[in-house]
Image (cartoon, rainbow over all chains, first blue to last red; front, side, top):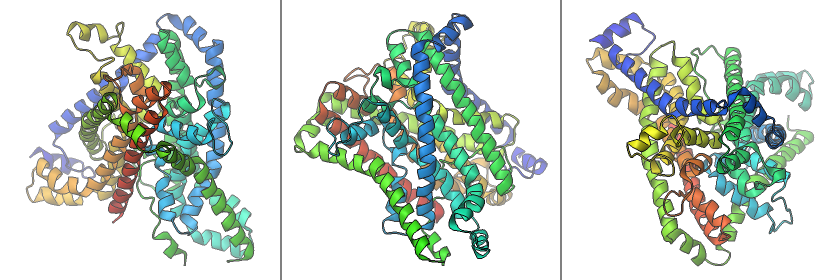
Length: 302
Length: 269
């Protein structure tokens, strides 16, 4: 059988499919990805350049587009900084602290991944909108953009930092403490450097998500001139028939996405070289739910 | 090591973290449940059981019924190829699969809108053949498939890497065919990882808004999924309707969350 031949010649690789099957499978995968992902994206790029690079540039540098991109980038930057800090704190209490209801809190972190973005928008509006029972009126302000983006990007940093905290060798901290290092010094010199790869990857993914976010911003912040993020601008341009303008802004977002994905891949390669020598060029996104349960962790404490 | 200052910082961090979660996630969610049922259950129920509401629910289920199996079969097959068959094209495939994670849903919607539009590369040909993609169900399915493409692959790859090939090789030595090995050895070993991916895919398809809104045109009673129904109801100032549909979606999201946690536990066991 061909399968045996494959195994014999390349022992590290499994014998899942015979040679012909693998070729066929590869063909299918490439075709599927081309039809579903690549062809449509190529259409956007092509459309943005339809009337030449000049009008592409004109569309990207138009006051509306520049204002939207500036707002999107600045809000996203604020959001990733805030979530980097609070995400690390939350990951920390989930791994190192112990309190009743910890399991529920750990489950709730994924809520923004599960909750439809339009529902998230309505949800935030119910609490922080014009009828806010707390008296906090954020609807249709730039603060609403920030809060909506904080909501949807919350899980990224938590889920990227959590496994690293779980894996971390506590003896280093104990050694540092016995040598007289204070809590902050231990964090700065030992814990933080160990968390950095995960934190950086989480931040990059959160940033990518924030740049393109649409649904959660829509109802809460609205499409007013002062709260017009890029994705909402793109929809408005589509609706007004300005295909070149819409695709030009889209291409800018697309390039940012590609850049951020490349950054995440590099960080993960760098991280895995430091951690363990598990090879393979495969990136595992930190959002994949490999092993985040820390039920057994408190026992390790003692 | 349990000094007074470490206890204080422990409480400080706990308060900060949990306070943040409460203000950002829990309180808004509780609030929308309260607002929905503030004036009784009749109004939100009416909205969901209106013809448009029921149609939106049906369409959402159709999206799930088509996109999830498609991406599951693709995802498992693709993960097998990536992990078990070295090929120089693998890193490229791997990178393309991550794209939907990072691209704005609106950009995804626009890309389909342009490809299948009247001036697009495929639009005119398909229109001649009498196939309608935009502003109809096929386009919405394409958008759903696009946005939910990575999940099963991403969840299956690490599990496949972890289980290794020993058992498969043993089965092969004993004369099992590739097909038998897949069904009897590989699939049972990766099932919880795949199931986790399926749950994430379902959640994403269920809630997809940006991409679907652009390709569908959001026509009431025709091309409206539940998330689009929520927006339309909100725009029509029918808040009970918007809240009712939102609660339905939120309950579905919470059940996927529950499923995720049960599966994580299974995976660890």
